[in-house]
Length: 213
Image 1 (cartoon, one colour):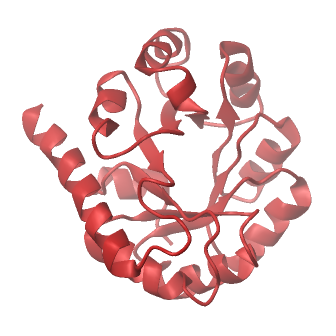
Image 2 (tube, one colour; image 1 turned 45 degrees about the vertical axis):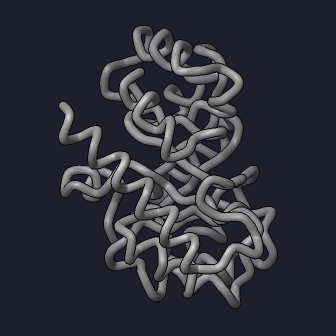
């Protein structure tokens, strides 16, 4: 199973696809569309229908080439259920030291949410080495730059909330290690072909940033 570090080191686009509301019966087709477009990180929020079934399906089919995991992870019991699927990514909207410590202890890639420097430092103290600025659209890239200046240099920050292919480069230019996209890539009812088209556009946008550097 690839880790986030491994994927980034080997050129995977720094983007997580958030499949909020996905059904387990459609997870495989949507996963194939995303992976086919080059996306290598996929998150199923736990307030989706039967989320652990979707995560298990994605892990079984794509877990050797993509990092699969859960979002909206709010308690230690959910961390344990996630680990049982074999998936490796744990994303939360908040800063909960217990959730972070449990995920780290199980060897998961943990990405808790924060909005203030105080929350970020609590998460780091609990063992997080990556954080998600959420909701990023309410802050703007300026907050990313400011927070980046005061946090340890080895802490990766991901912009989540209101990110799309048009502004992803702005977030990376402001100091984000990566971005995560929900509605800009997937909403319930969107066909896999359209999801793949959107994912190709995102990957192309991120690749054009790399070319410009």
